[in-house]
Each structure stands twice: as C-alpha cells, then as structure tokens.
Amino acid sequence: MRTIHELTAAFAKGEASPVGVAEDYLARIGALDDRLGAYLTVTRDDALAAARAAEARYRAKAPLGPLDGAPVALKDVFCTRGVRTTCGSRILERYVPPYDATLVERLKAAGAVILGKTNMDEFAMGSSTEHSAFQLTRNPWDLARVPGGSSGGSAAAVAGGLAAGAFGTDTGGSVRQPAAFCGVVGLKPTYGRISRYGLVAFASSLDHVAPFALDITDTALLLAATAGHDPLDATSVDAPVPDYVAALASGVKGLRVGVPDEYFGAGLDPEIDRAVRAAIDVLRDLGAAIERVSLPTTEYGVATYYVVAPAEASSNLARYDGVKYGLRVPGGKDLIDMVSRTRAAGFGPEVKRRVMLGTYALSAGYYDAYYGQAQKVRTLVRRDFEKAFARVDVLAAPTTPSVAFKHGEKSDPLAMYMNDVYTIPASMTGLPAISVPCGFNGSGLPIGLQLIGRPLDEATLLRVAHAYEQATPWRQRRPELS
Ligand code: GLN
View (tube, rainbow, N blue to C red):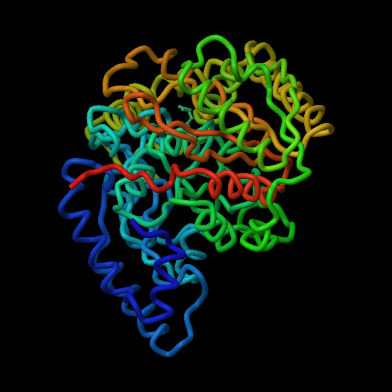
C-alpha cells in the first residue's frame, strides 16, 4: 500500500503513471468493495479523466504539486457537481448538487483524482456508519466489526487500500474515531481552517472538514492543499497556512506534552491505556517533557455535545421539507402533511431522535435550561484547555475508550454516544486534534493515540505525530484483505 507522497514521487520519476495507478485502485474497489462497503458511488470516468490530465502534466514535467494524480475518496457529505451526494440519507438519495464544495474545488485544482463518494452515518450522526440508509461498512481489520463513524467509509477505504487518502468530517470525533478504529491517521484541523462551503451541514458550530491518510507526511500534504481562507464560508479563518511538511522535520526535543488525568479513567480499555502510555514514553525518549495536566470538565463533554449538536442539527435539517431538495412524498392533504410524510419517510431513526432532542432543547421555556446552559459549559471546557496550554504545547491521550466494536453491538444510543468521550472536547473547543496509530490489541485491532494542540497550531501536532510515527513500526502493518 503506497502513500500519496510515494505515489507522486513515482509519477515524477516516471516509475508509475497516474492512469495506471487510478486503474489499480478502481480494480481493487471492484474486487473488494462488495465486502468492505466503503463506497456509495464510484466516479470511474471522472477519475480516469482526471488521471489522464495528471499524466499529461507529468509528461510535460509540469505537475500541479504534491497531490497531482493522487487517488482520493470523499465522504458523501461534500457537494460534488454532477455527482450524487446522499449524506447517507434517503432524503438526499437522488440529490445531485449543481456545484462543488470548496474542498472539492481545491482538491481538483491540486490535481487529485477523486475515486468516489464514501459511506457514512446518515447526516454524520453516529460512530459506526451503521446509521447509513444504504449499506453496512466493514472494518478492514475484522469484517465483523464497524469501521467507526460517521466517516467510516473514508476510513475503511484508506485502511483497505481503496484510496490513498480521503476526507471526512469531524463534528464530535467522526474522523479521529474511525481513524483509530481502522489504523490510519485522521486530523481534525482547527475550526475554520478548512472551508465548510458545500459541506452538508450537521452542527454548524462543530463541523470540521478533516483528512485521513496512511502517514503524517500525507496528512500534512492533504491539509496544506485544502486549508486557508474562503470568503464563501463566514467561519473560515483568515490566517496564513504554514508549510506543514517543512515543520515535520523539527522533532519533539524541548516540547512539553501534557497528559490529562481525566482521559485515563474508568471505562478506558486497559489495552488502550497501556498502548497510549507506551506511546507517551516514546515521546519522552525522543526528548519531550511529559507533564500531568487536568481537564476537569471532561466528564460534561458528552452531555453538552448532545444538547448543542442536536439543537444545531434540528435547525439545519429543517431545510429538508420536500420542496427545496431531495425527496418529496406526494399525496398529502396539504403542505404540512406533505412535509411530515416526506420527513417521516426520508429520515432514519437516529436523525429523527436528534431532531426531536434538538427541537426540545431549543423550544421556548427550555432554551436557557438546555442550549444556553450547554453553551456556558462549552466555555468552561475551553477554559480548561487554555489553562493546560499555558503549561504544555500539546496534549496526549487515547482517541477512543475502546477498539472497533462488532456490528450491532451498540444498540443503545447512549452506549454509542459514550464512545465519543475523548474526541468531543476538542470538537467543542475547535482545537486541532489528530489520531495516530499507536499499536494493536491482543486480537490485532488498531489503537489510536490522540494529540490535541493549540488553536491553529496544526504544525506542532503534525511534528509530534511525525516524530512518533518515525520512531514506531505501526504504519508498516496493513490489513490482509485479498
Ligand atoms: N458520533 C458523534 C455523533 O453521533 C460525532 C459525529 C460526527 O463527528 N459527525 O454526533
């Protein structure tokens, strides 16, 4: 399984061709995706056309940059012009956007070859991809298990060698958690770092566009090509984008790494506890100073998120009314009846649960008690991190409390929600956070180390992650699928 930087280096030397590589990936998708279920749509013709264009540029010795010809996959939450964008939902089953998301535009401008659109939990609500209206996605390391979610299709595609890199979205952990479950890298940048324009909205104050990759160098390349201000997204940050790849070489000597007590408590799988502590020892051996820190509000994260996220979702999803987009169920006796039949048929049970929770939390008389209160707690969570970052440069913790679970294992919504306990705080604060493979449990399932950084300091995160990756063998182990 080759990384993007290995592929594009081979393209530049003429040792591999973008068309040949695109054909290989498409063939692998054809051979394996029946079992994996990573893709909802494969854009074969567009991919080959993009690969031919890349090939011509390499032949003319004028590639567009380090992603030219790189085969990537996109979660089916990003609008793609002329290509169905379902968001994992019946309500958008036949929706074909008239425009590309900024992410997609930037990837195309960088020469990336988009292989297709990947499966996801409906409207990105979930942690297992089991809430997709269309299909199950399997974890390449153990087909009986979930790939995580909600960006499970993208994570499974990269882990299974069905794409060299991918993008997902992380609202409460939906890139870091599947990255941990599938043994790949997942980076949630700072809120606003990558434009959300053209992303189907779930919870607007929490939604982040985020890359998956096989290693840290590729992660840095994918971030560099897509980060940066976008006037089309009012929350996009107008700050310079540093040279992330150049930052990787600096190592961790002299950096202070904080270890938050609250991320190692009850409920953490002992094998994950051991692997993450061993990873922290590696960082110490590499010259980082390790310090204990405390983030006392951690225990309120899940409860707070499950007020804020459903509240924003209930508002965002009000647009699916049978008139403006997607599905319409005809035959109602009046407008209200048509809208309610459409939404009843178009949304799955988890989406309905969120819309009901959110509508309740926002309703007159309850707004202050729930949504208002949750926003105040969110401020307290942010202050915890500010205090910690006055003393340390990055935080190191587990990404998830458990390894990938079996399909059907978490039928109780609360059990599923609790899986986000370590990823939600960085989502609510908008802080950049990355999941890096840090070993395997006794059954050969991957474990993720999470690093959380200061606002806009993805460079330090990548630097620490890179030093760790280079010092450990994990990225060499890949699942056997064929
Ligand atoms: N699992 C969380 C949820 O269901 C996070 C989802 C996400 O990050 N999109 O809301």
